[in-house]
Length: 115
Image 1 (cartoon, rainbow, N blue to C red):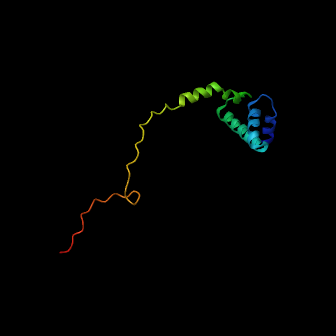
Image 2: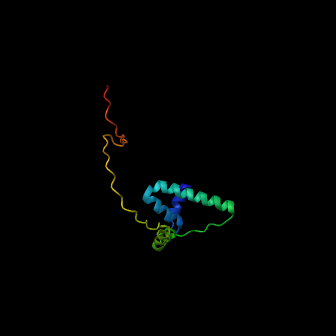
Image 3: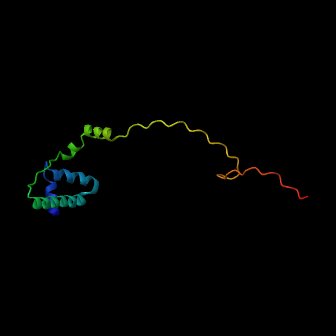
C-alpha cells in the first residue's frame, strides 16, 4: 500500500498528489505516505461496497475549498449580533467591618452595671 501511495503522490494533477503534498508539509513524507495509503484503502473499500467507480476530485480540490468569498459569507452568517451595552456599574458601598465579607453586627446597648 505504501508503494501505491508513493506512486500516487508522484502523479500530476490528481487529488492524491495534492493531498500528499499538503500532508508532507505538516507531517513529513513517511506519515504522508501512510495517510495516502489509508485514503486509497478507504476509497477501494467504498468502491467495493457501493459498486461506484473512482472519480478523482482533482488537484484544485483544496484551492476551491479556500474560496475567500465563501469564508467571508460563512463568518457573516455565523457571527453573533452585537451585544447591547450594559448599564454602568455603581461603586460598591463601603464596608466598615474589620473582616472582609463579614456582616455588620447590630449595635448593642451599654453593658449593665451590677447594682
